[in-house]
Image 1 (cartoon, helix red, strand yellow):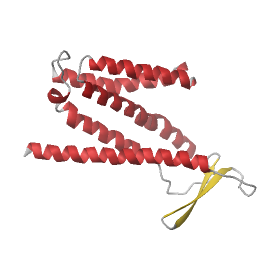
Image 2 (cartoon, one colour):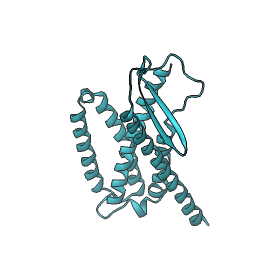
Image 3 (cartoon, helix red, strand yellow):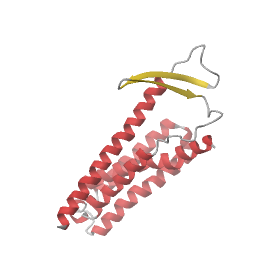
Image 4 (cartoon, helix red, strand yellow):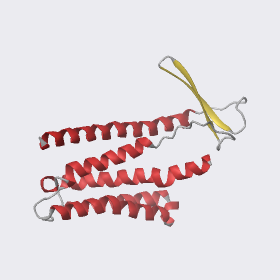
Length: 202
């Protein structure tokens, strides 16, 4: 009975993670396209960067982007943040259910650590400690040099993956690297993008 419920829980979280991730990535691509499609002309109001017209499902849409925050905002303002939060929370839940609760089966490897709890501790330290390193690097002078920061983070990710492979299974090592990078992305939304967006709204 427990195994049956466990499989259904794993399946539900897995599909929630996939759907939320698609929504998050889709939002990102949509707004990249939207920014690239903005047009302005002599009739564009002051303070407006541009506008984009589109058609979908039999409806016509007109989207306007302001240079800065407009003078007034509607009571209902849609925030594009829950897709990233849901992706991260479901991903962490999946990591816990599949790997941390079954560490003996999925994380231990010959020549690596022998304790399941140690393997889980290493995995958790990678995910959360990795974000701490990422945050410090972004706040350091490297944060003003995107190219150098990118190379540094790539080197950090590669060396972390190599180190993990020495102590836990390769499959667990790379899923934890993915979780670490996903935590960078979601943490950036939670700690940088949304707080600054709230300041603009205020």
